[in-house]
Length: 116
Image 1 (cartoon, rainbow, N blue to C red):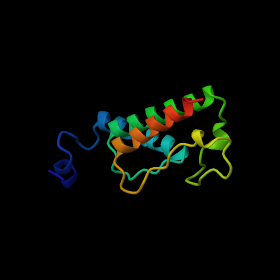
Image 2: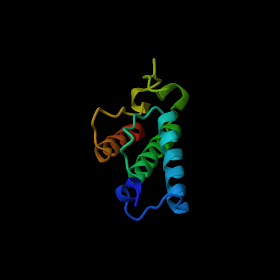
Image 3: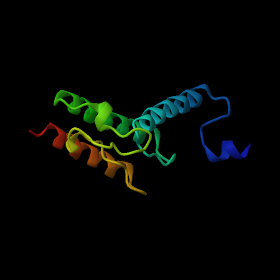
Image 4: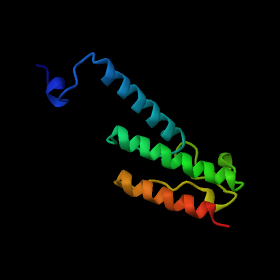
């Protein structure tokens, strides 16, 4: 048995289901990074999905309340220079911040974005 097979119980090299899960996780991680989110690379598949869902809810709320994501969202990890409204800026993930804590902060920012 190889080291890789020992490290990942139940996952065999060339396992199509594992390959597909990895590809989906990479796609989700790429979508999050393009939105300016910092990822550690240690996030689980489920954590990546929760992050993406939280970000999409935030963005939908911003758009419903007249925000412009092109101005308010950071690009490639850089803070927006002059956002239309600070409520419409996606929070940045702190160093070593757990995914659940970050998802909670995004949810709070979503509520602030919805407030008049």
